[in-house]
Structures are given as structure tokens and as C-alpha cells.
Amino acid sequence: MYLKASDITRYQREGFLMVPQVLTPEEVAGFFEEAAAMLSRGKTLHWPSEKGMVMDWVADAEIESAIMRRLALHPVITGIAEELAGRPLRLFKSELLRKEGTGSTMTPPHIDEFALPISGAPVTLTAWVALVDVPKERGCMKFWPGSHQVKAVDEAQDLASHPEMMFLPRVTLPLRAGDCTFHHARTVHSAHANETHTTRISLATVYMDEGARFEPRTLYGDGMNDKLSRHLATMQAGQALSGECFPRIRWKD
Ligand SMILES: O=C(O)CCC(=O)C(=O)O
Image 1: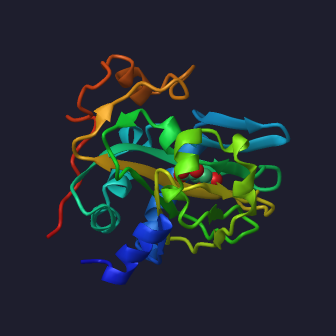
Image 2 (image 1 turned 180 degrees about the horizontal axis):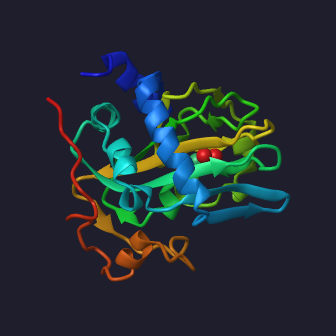
């Protein structure tokens, strides 16, 4: 076991958990080197905002790079994910995120579930591992505790129609390089702008229930040409998200 029972209870209550130093400094250095090389190749997707750029990212990081696949399937991270989920999981996708220094804008509050083409998977969660120090000024994440259990948000699919969410308490979580947050797919979260001169780099990996099935979503994949989107385009609604593309991650007793 990597976690205490109280960590798991807390995750279940709040919908997120920060676990410090899941990576050693040596691991961070190795993964950072590969991440920087991948990002420098420039093949990224972009999330623009009215005021600038929220971030850009390498989709399919774990397909493009064996080193990133090792990080997406890292035994400590996947072990914690399965302890939080309480059941076997599969890897859905892994994205290498970049929030450029001085100029990138905040990540707006959102819920991942509505952008994930996954059904029958009540335990979908994301591991977000920092490859540089991420204080608030560099764009650390914020989470709305307990929001994964709010029915109104569950049904609304659109936070803009729930302005009251903006008046609920939220938690700002600065991370050191090698720290990792885990958040439930229904937890409302956002991130600050990067106001520093250092680029924020992290890997966000989505894990899903072993029995997850494909549910086409209009929000997903429009205009995207990454390998995962192309693979999903060949799938039928209700088909199992399994096989080589969506491997089982380990299950620890
Ligand atoms: O990195 C960010 O700013 C947001 C990431 C996010 O929304 C996610 O990993 O689900």
C-alpha cells in the first residue's frame, strides 16, 4: 500500500489528493529531459483563450515516447491510482502539458468527464505529475473539494450555467517537481496563469475502469489528428476500451 486509509477516505470525500514526491529527483531529471525534447519538436495541440494561450500539449505522449510511457505506467503512480479507485484500471491517455512562462492564461474551471469519451467508468481519474516546481505563480492547479459529488454539476455539463460554483471554497495546490495530484473526472478544477519566466511542464495521465466502454462525445476529437483520436474514430459506441491501446495498469494487493 502506498496510501493511508485516511488518504483514500479524503480522496473519496474531496475528489482529489496530492501525493508528494512520487518521483525521485533522478527520475524527474530523466523525464524532464525527454519532455523538453518532445515539446521542442513543436508538434503540439493548443488551447487558446480570449486573452492568449491556456497551454499547449503533446497528445499521445505515451505512444510517442517509450520514456513517457514509463512515466504514465510508473509503478508508484499507477499503484496509487488503483488504491484510490479501489479497482483495476486501464490507461486511457497521457498528455504532456506545457504552460509557457509570462503570457499563458489561467486554465478555466472545468470537469474532465464531459470531454472524455468513456462510459461505464465511475472511477475515471487523472494523475498530474509536475516535472518542474509549480508554485501558484507558475500555474498550479486549484480544486473544488467535494464538487465531484454535486449533482447539479453532474447534470449541467457546463459550468458557465453554474456561476454559484465560483463562490464555493477551493484549494490551491502548489507542487514541487516530482509531486503528483490525483483528481476524479467529476472534480471541478482550474489552474493559475504562469506569470514566471519558467515553463510549467507536467504529464497528465487519465486512468479508467477496467470495464470502461467507448461513448462518442462531441467535445472530443473535433479536428484532432493524434493517434488516439484516429483510433477512437474507428470505434463503435459501447465497444470496450481495451487491448493494446488501453493497457491494464498493475493491480497491487
Ligand atoms: O494543467 C492544467 O492547467 C489543467 C490540467 C487539467 O485540466 C487536467 O489534467 O485535467
